[in-house]
Length: 403
Image 1 (cartoon, helix red, strand yellow):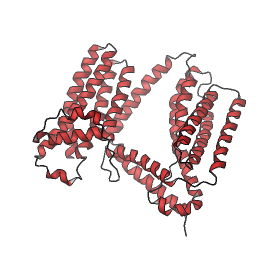
Image 2 (image 1 turned 135 degrees about the vertical axis):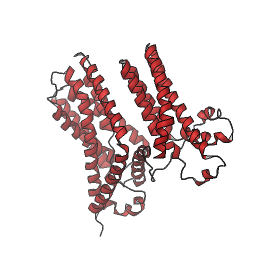
Image 3 (image 1 turned 90 degrees about the horizontal axis):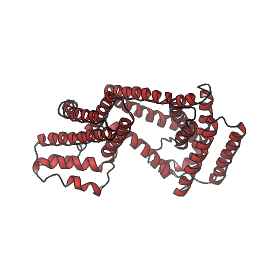
Image 4 (image 1 turned 45 degrees about the horizontal axis):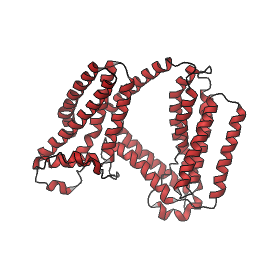
């Protein structure tokens, strides 16, 4: 006899164990130290910035804008697999308890993220408001209720196939979430909050009535679950091999001018291969762009010279460390072993490309500091970045790849 409780327990426990295994690789010693330093630096500058705010600063509006995003994005973690759209569809009416537990788990995980975001934003609110931190737990309780409403709406939306419904719902819910949060933190009259809550209840009821006799869109649920896990697998793949990871490749024809600069010779065979992989793979190119943008923004707002130097080297290290798996990206492709090319050319090609990437990042960081008019520190960052990149590629990476 079918037991939906056992099914949910098996799926959820297996998924959590799998995530826990990969988290042990991700949160290794090096990365934890770097993250702690970054968090400490960010907290220091954030507190100094908060102390400069006046009572007229629109903290409530900024909080409403940011929390609106975290409240609106409310996926339901279903733990569904590809085969479920064949074997579980006939049992859909018996899976209400399964999906209800999925909703609760989603609320717990996303509520924890909401707690962290609120804890980060509260010092700014307490500085410009007379309430201080007194209302923290009240705000958290109300926001968790709003998050539960968003998760419930997000679930009812999965009964539709029209993309327009999803887009309209996102806009409507974001507007309601941001407005409610703004009124909440602005100490608005309780009557206004009650009116908004009535509107929210009516909004959910309208979707519930219209979808009551509809069937779930299993292919959409499974696709979204696979995308979420693929994102996690891509992150874990930067630290260890992930067999379940499916490569995502994009043509990016507009970057062909970079490839054309590589001369056709036997020594450049692997350089061409690694360059193509880096430019076409969303994992590596996207990672480089994200870290460069985040690092550039942080460097622009940090005015402490030594802090700029340390932060730039940290982001260069993070970029280089997370690009190391690129060297083994094609290890399971047997046809590459047929290349009539010495193995030393493969190592040299990877090191050359990694050095170029890190030097480009160093140059970008230098230009950002130079735009601020700090030419001396920009020169120091450039020279330090080039030296650090050389040492990282020719000493650290060799040791890591042989381990």
